[in-house]
Image (cartoon, rainbow, N blue to C red; front, side, top):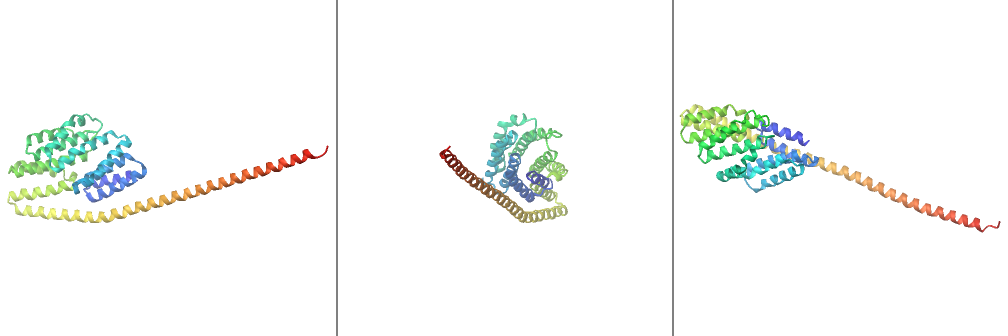
Length: 313
């Protein structure tokens, strides 16, 4: 069941269904703990850390990170532990501490590069570096790490959709940087490039994409096109709101089903335990009766033998 819900969450991720993704990773974690599937539990915990930290931006998300570390240690998943190790840099990146984030990443960059069986960790480090340098205004270094990231295209150990998703995020970031600096042609180039990857964008990137188009057409004084993208953004936000509301109801029902199932399983186990206790008591009673009967029989035999000995020959 854990793998089933994990797969559903990954499908939700592909179709940009954020609330449903959170719901299914929550259920994946529940079942993974029951099934002692520690790899799945670690992966679900990490995803929940991402989602919770993105929303709350506070320490409540760290319980999932601690759980991920615990589960990966139990399963001996070294690559999973590497991803956990990347999270402090991610937190600094997301908190706007771009220099500190870069420092943490650069200290381990060669280690990430050396992991040949999964290029994700190296790609993610490059993604954060390129994004951080955009925000620091060092566009040269941003392009440096972005170009290295692009060289990973087609890597057999890297998910194509995951690669494209991170590529789209950097492209929208570059488009925004150039638009803010009134470099309209460069901005339009990256807006056009990111449009080709709309299918790989998460809701955060889609929202950025719509806002980029609105700001671009505002700068070009194309009010008709600007209005169209404002309407598109409204439709998108309405869809997101409906999805969140539907998923909040569904997750409550789903978790209730899990709790009911757990309760039924516990009652079943308790029923078996009661039968085992009853059987044990019965066996003890039978043993006691057997012992008493054996003693009584032995006494009768002893008395009988004694009587025989006392008879005259």
